[in-house]
Structures are given as structure tokens and as C-alpha cells.
Length: 109
View 1 (cartoon, one colour):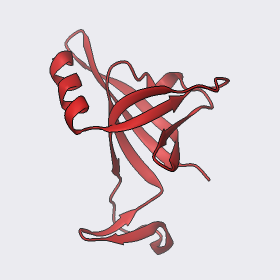
View 2 (cartoon, one colour; view 1 turned 60 degrees about the horizontal axis):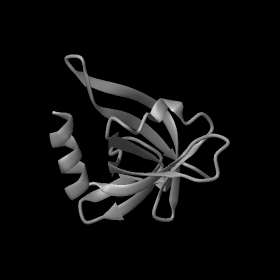
View 3 (cartoon, helix red, strand yellow; view 1 turned 180 degrees about the horizontal axis):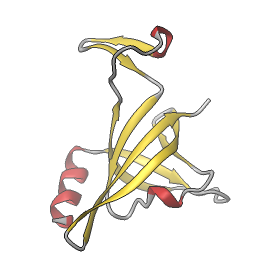
View 4 (cartoon, one colour; view 1 turned 90 degrees about the horizontal axis):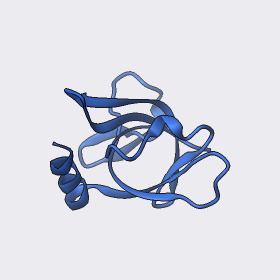
């Protein structure tokens, strides 16, 4: 299952860089990043898109088993010109095998 997930990420994922606390050089990885869409939030944190208003301050990240989002400390994740802090992260297993990492990200100021 892990090999299949890596193939999907390499073909369809975005290139992101993980910067661990205290390290100047980042680790390049592939992941899926998607803004969190929810109702009833502050209007100023939303941006119009062809699909409607989208929150720009919180994002979901799905990454490969090598990303270890819980080990960044005060580090961050960079994608394009945006940087994100990991608010919450957890590994997702299929049986005994770590398949991917799920993370909730916040845009850094």
C-alpha cells in the first residue's frame, strides 16, 4: 500500500519542503495540500475562488510515511511562497504499516 501511495503522491502531489527546528536545510517531499473549507468563519479569512469562498488560514496536508509531521518541533512546512505551522498531526496505519501522515496546518504570519 505504501508504494501505491508514493506513486499517487509523485504523480499528483505538490512539492513541499519540511524545515525541522534548528535546521537550515529543508527536506523536499511530496504531499497533498488543500485549504480547509468550513461554514460560519470570519469573512476576512476567506478568499473567493471558482468553487466559492475558501479559508486561507488552515490547510489539510496528506503526506508520505517519511514526512513525520510530529517531529518538526518549531519548524515549518513551505510550499511555493507560503509557509505553514503544523497544528496537529497523526500517522495513519493500514494494519501494522504506516501509510501516510495527516496534518492540520496554519498559515504562518
